[in-house]
Image 1 (tube, rainbow, N blue to C red):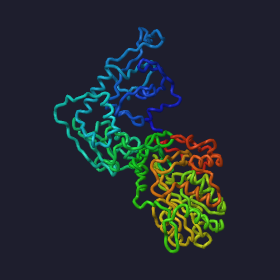
Image 2 (cartoon, rainbow, N blue to C red; image 1 turned 90 degrees about the horizontal axis):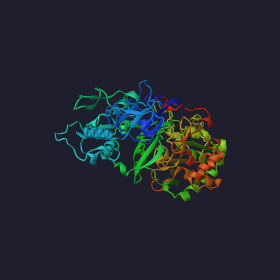
Image 3 (cartoon, rainbow, N blue to C red; image 1 turned 90 degrees about the vertical axis):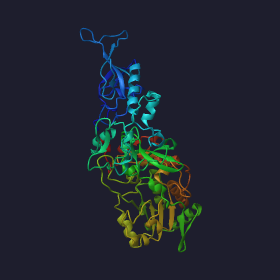
Image 4 (cartoon, rainbow, N blue to C red; image 1 turned 30 degrees about the vertical axis):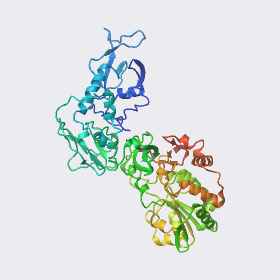
Length: 569
């Protein structure tokens, strides 16, 4: 485990009696004063301290008044009338981040001395800081702004010229440094060294002109570099992707999960007017702690591709025409009903939600059950030992649970069936068979009835007889099971464009047209029906999954269960 996990001491740590602002409480041994105050519903401002990083103690913003039990001549605590030790207060402040709680300790988070010290620290931090809040990406999330309101002075006594430091420095593929804003908290340095093992950042020119810089011959290009933007408290490190794009107070933040791999990092989707502007990590100690990789974080831009599929299309004669859903779905169902089960196959996707997989499995049962071959296209990458999983499908476990995945082993049979003419109809959901499954063009062209459900055009969709435009992860609500067997929830952040439709609604309408009935009207009803038919989901609902998910690994097959990546972070 991360040795610097300061906010979670060992579960068996002994409890110590500590006085916080006059109230005696108990805290586990190993907790520092900042975290102890947090548990006591008191706030100690800080910049350099981060619960997942080592202690540097260089910003001095977390100064507190500290005391220890007053001792008598026998070196035993002097007790007050309430039976608690009397506190002997130290004459000078201490930094809370590097102060561990001890038996009988007293902490004052607010006092005239503490207030005066914090105002002095704020004055020093603001001496050379530029007044560029109107153009700073951090505005609205800036700790310097927030603390200056409570602890800052109305004016500045500094009359000399400010120290000018480098601006718009390209230090990485995705990072721009505005060093004039840096308050030298060193969070970014410690994160890169301790959590990513990429010791690339450091301070140079110690003194009034101290500057953050990359080591000679290196760049901040690791796959977790944008986490330094998240933890930078003042906007010195900025994301090239988000820089000058949108004011954060205009963004609507939606709790969701990353669909870039099987880890399923918890995220916040920042959107405005049906456009996604950024995706940032959301804390979940059971999945991703407070981090996520850059690859997953930036993997949303395809949603707004100008070539996005937005209207259903059906083949008419030798051409293709946009066709209303009310006409297309019955036509498709009629053609599928005219085929034998052995003439139909399904290539699903590990990107489908559990609800979509459940409805697709029911469609498969209506069409002929196991006689209808089905599988997913496996996506394998290289695990990085931090958060990135080797399984690049976010819901392989869900598709396996509903019998739609054989980890790609059935794809060869499906392809052989098409090549020999035995399989005449193929349903493809969110996959490009040519690029991702490696099928030759001749195989796909040999399919007599090709149905493609997707959101972007590709060589497979161009050959489709029926093209069904679906939804992206940011446009749907549903659930997925990550590689460690944790059930997690997607939430809808933006609307589905034009005539495209949510994937579960497409499948529900197709099921109804095939004669499977249609008594479901909401995604919550789909989950309820799925939970009643699936023992692993018994007693659950979408709302009961909660923001942090539910551990299902004891209810699932142990095959393919991956250990949580948090063992390393």
